Image (cartoon, helix red, strand yellow):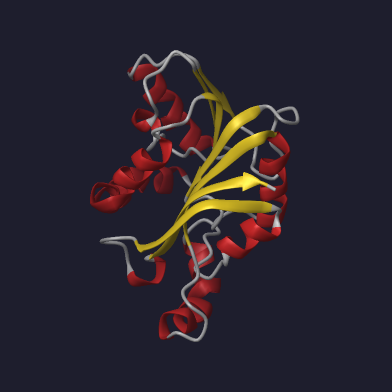
Length: 207
């Protein structure tokens, strides 16, 4: 991702963050504890939404160097402790097997190069009773007009939006990776452009 894209990312996302994403993330993260990994942490949009608990050990992974610079600056400016920053990709997480109680991904699965490898890695680093928390924009319903436009525009959108896929069926990928949905919600991402409005969010357990 270019420096300019990373620099303007927060500004471009602010309306949607205020409209729904902050609320959704806060709800998903309210009960996390123990060792937590957020993959694709970006510029740190979720930093202040984690519980304020001394029992929380947070690791944030962000492979893009321009995003990671902003993430590290936010951590320093807020004087946050017990946070480690990793530079690894989701396809090859730099952690031992069964390390984390929770893994969180927000608007990540749409952009990774290999979603199957990423989910396999998430499953690997989760403890046997661990939870995968997700918030993703996804493909619209098959056969719908919006899905047809997602399919048509996806090659161009990927080039413009850092490999973001408009038509990725992330729910199926999560299930096929061997997770069982503990809870899942489908909702429209308010104020976002129509092609990226369909979302899923929830919690999946290792099967």
